[in-house]
Length: 227
Image (cartoon, rainbow, N blue to C red):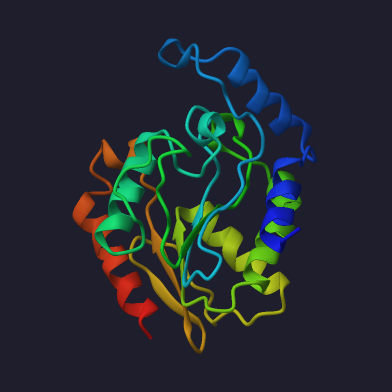
């Protein structure tokens, strides 16, 4: 069994957080009208992408009726529409749309993970739940030999990544990087941490995050990945 298959199996079999297990399964039993008749994944959602990644995207968590339904990170919701469009535009994805895991889309030198692999109630994981999921992110970082850019989508993903980086004994710059859209910090000689507002409907519908703003971050990531 390859490390990739083993990692996938361990993530998807996890039942460490009772509140998350109950929530992800409850939303699958009683979906909103627009998703009735769909078979939900309703398990922890594994990371997705190229094993030789240079770009690591860290989101918050699977959406209850997005990745918790489809089983693939950022697939099946409006946030994913924004993300995969940007990934394709800047050469990190084979296609601009990701309707379902069987669509043939591939990530190119990129990988998508999350601070937590289960859909949390109200999109708000607890500190204990984040800590329970942190070993998975630690494992991904340890195996990221070609990593050049970490793109954190939202403040929780940003702080979770920095906490995980420090837990691995890696040096965190002083002063500690602060979250803000477009913020950037060098966290290793050839690795940068970038920040973006999350492409949630709350941010995109209100104009807090616009497509040009989102694309600017990906343009920066593309240039840094060339180093």
